[in-house]
Each structure stands twice: as C-alpha cells, then as structure tokens.
Length: 209
Image 1 (cartoon, rainbow, N blue to C red):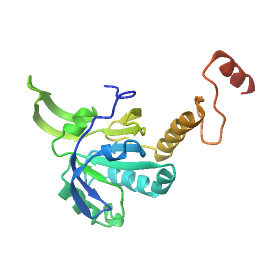
Image 2 (image 1 turned 180 degrees about the horizontal axis):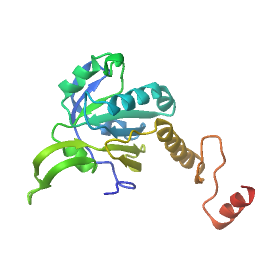
Image 3 (image 1 turned 45 degrees about the horizontal axis):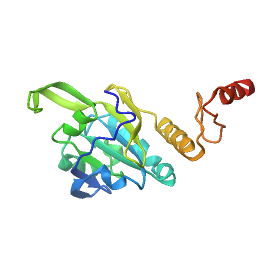
C-alpha cells in the first residue's frame, strides 16, 4: 500500500523519550504544522541490525534537527522492552544514548496501518487483527511533511539495513522543492541545482548536464 501523498495514519501509543521517560500518549500529531518527521520502523529490540540503525540515526540527529525534522522510531515491542534496551551499553549490543522517541506498537495496529507488518495474520470482517504467528515490522521509513502528509516511503526486508545519508538527502530534496518550487533530478544532493518542471526547464537542465 502506497501512503505517499496521503495523510500519515494517526495513532496514540506509549513511547520512551530521551532514553528514560515512558509516556502513554505519544502521537505524531504534535509535529503537524511545526516539523517534518522521519518515522521509521525496525523489527525487534535486542537484535543485531536494529541497533546499528538506531545508533546511525542518533549520530546524525543534529543534522535532522538543524533541518527542523524530528526523528521517531517504532517497533512492535513493549515500552518496557524499549526502556530495558535503552539501559544497555552500545558495546554490549544495547542502544543507550538514543534520545529520540521510540514508540511501542504493542497492538501491531501502527505497523498494520503503515503497511509494514510482517508475519502470519489476517483481518476479519470486523476489521480485527487475528494473529496466527509472530508479527514484527519490516524496516519501513516514512518522510512526513509539516502538513502531516507522507512524501516518501521506503520499506526494506528484515536483513537489509537502511542508509541514513539517503534519508537526509530525500529530506533535503523535499525542503528544496518546498522552498524553491523546483524539482530534483536523479542523484540530486544539497547544493546542486534543481530544475523547473516544464519542457524548457528540463531541456535547459539536460543541455547543461
């Protein structure tokens, strides 16, 4: 299911903030009208590829924040599991030092609504989720604009870690388009020129490149 161009599914769920504080009513709605959001899913706490991604986003958190973008993570583990993993040192496989919010999708409905849910399940006629096996989230990533609309999505299979530099590049491209009205050609990166979305603009760009 493509969410690009649609309102990001709304939710209210428990989350851990600043690595220590558990809150019960976290929502992405708090950022609407204020910030762009990178919202990403990872499969499970206390695993192997997942901490490399979580730390990679933390290492570049200042770059996201300088662009007015919040970073929020989510998995189907409980908030207590998130909190416990956050107390474990990085050298021991933990994620201590992560400060951005980590949402607990214990009902699996957030992953379901973002179409990142992996596992054996079905939905009955009443819309209830029926599990017949373990359910976790694929590595989904969503860039949400200030209006709360999904502008980019990427979903990787479980073994495939993501590139944080690419997440920043796409954020830069979106903000460039919002600020200048120009579109971003292949392999565009911040500092490069865009092009006008018309025949002349395309022709001029291609002539120079």
